[in-house]
Image (cartoon, rainbow, N blue to C red; front, side, top):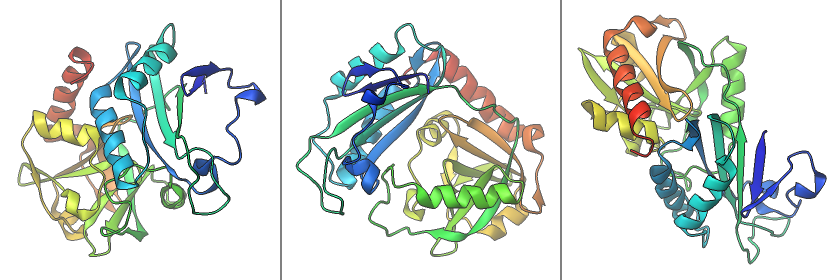
Length: 276
């Protein structure tokens, strides 16, 4: 972690006085929402869309009131001023101080900004379908929350197979999403992605790709992976990443023509429009 601010006040990450109180409900029960943004040329890419989704997530979990968007923008500008030119910005809003139980305290919310470098980006991804499912009817559907233990377990299971991302199905046996990514499948030259009704998160990169190229929201199953010509995943830190395999299914990865075209279009957008 390189730089940290809490409610707009910057702290030394190594200073114990900057620690979040143990009574914070985000720590005790994971009661909070967050966004991960990529830092591109010293700016937070697609900040407006991320702030919109942060508020949507907060509405789903009934968290708030949040700081005004202009206030968060000011804090983001301050933490990125004279800061890293590339990397990751994590924006977290917790329910603030509360009891050691599921019941919330009276707030106010706590807003935490932190920057760090990006992990080395692989040219291709390998996915593993894990045995656990997403609940497409769960209370947190549509929200990007700090309750991420399911993703931690799923990703660790994928890593034990040599994969770098897990692929989760929903309770109906349909393809849903990765632990931190959306999935796209190319069938007969056409790009498909699971609909939001599958329980997947409305990814920012997923949204942008759908504005750049024609994408069909389609209910997909593992059987579709058997006949897919190409597969790729998207996220705010992966951008558009080709998939080389899903378990024992092999794909062209970065050699896939459709994936390469989407990657190129998205790279152009990122280079020319910091807040699309």
